Image (cartoon, rainbow, N blue to C red; front, side, top):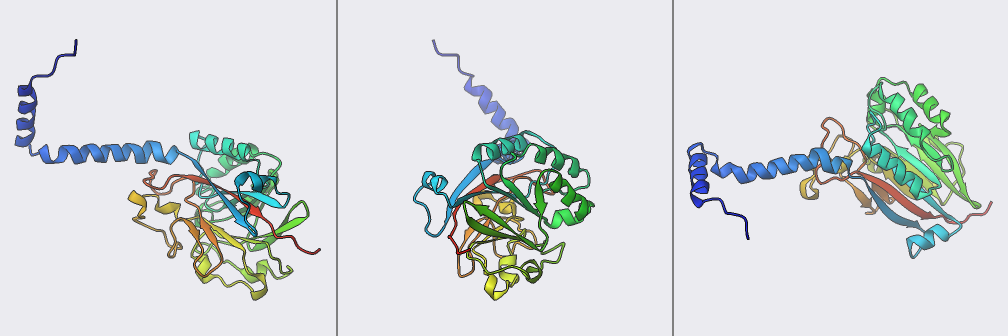
Length: 301
């Protein structure tokens, strides 16, 4: 037996009342707005995805082949955490990092944004796997956080990480080497590529870490030190980007929003990042952990 139906008169009376109150035209849009707010505040900001890519020459045919290749380096990019506590999103991030079995973790700025965030960063780094090397740069929020760069560097060092501010290091995988250059932030600091590469020899495997993607168009590398790949963040993919259209892009974004860019300059990937700033909302810009399997070019010693 089907359940009894509500009398039509009741529905009609309700519509008459709403019409008298001038609310009939707003009921459907209001429901959509409420649904969007629930998604933007509670669902999307806590829904972490992993974006997988293969990079290098020659690119491996599949992700499985990439992992098997001895000269393939697995890189995880963690960006724009805006860390203030270790919650569900951060726990999901840690699980994904452990499951990825990476060779290198890079944090591309805005990891913290306030003085009180340093304790949470200490807890997060303590839970990082010990095997991959961890390298970090700073973003505009680290510069305005009130945390000294010396204290931030010590926090990374306590957990085996390194803070790169206009500095380059070498990462090795089975005899193949990758140079990683980390620049200071474009907005809050003074990026200096010449200083970062002054004592380095040219290499065919060069990863440049920048926070603001506009660095791709404004920073001039020394001619002999061209970048193979740039990794950037800062934009949050727009953070509020219904249908993928970013309503606002912060200063330092340039013409970039998210994803791959290979239009005449060095290839660059702009991460949508993980956390939020100013407003705790994400619409159309799901948080992401970026995983890149880089087939390194072998070089003479």
